[in-house]
Length: 191
Image (cartoon, rainbow, N blue to C red; front, side, top):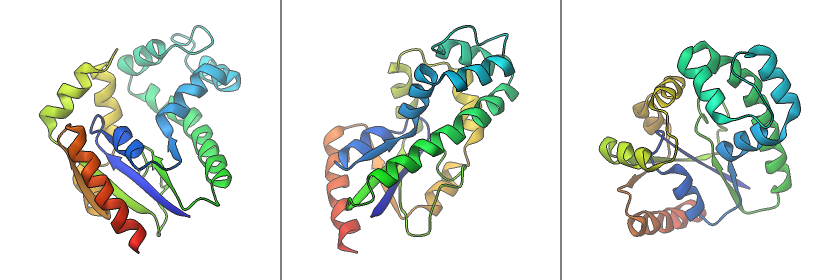
């Protein structure tokens, strides 16, 4: 089974690109959201560590945003609790799909959390900063303070790009990205 990892900056279009592969996809952001909505043990740990902010179950993202906005150290507390759970979910996903030809890993902190394997095919989604900002503004409830603090967790785009096997430009015109992913799939599966 080939593992195709999609990396890039926040708002660069990684999730949209991942969907275009048409393969089983592990989306770390979706898993984090499920943890906040469904995992009472995670809620209890977060409430214990951040009682000033975590008030009720399911966990409200606004409460987490306030915690991170108020103190950047709270982000580390949250990630120490949530990331191991996401890793477990990823391992379950990989076991479940081990007979598939390939899977896509849409994980924003793929390199940072040392999830990369030697044989992984890493695709960097490269986008213009102005277009990223425009796309992020369209998203509902985007907290720019939180995005900046999340950005600090990430290694630079230049390092990610250098460590990637392929770079795809996303100009936020769907047809262009679809065409590039189609070409890329042929290259990946030719190997």
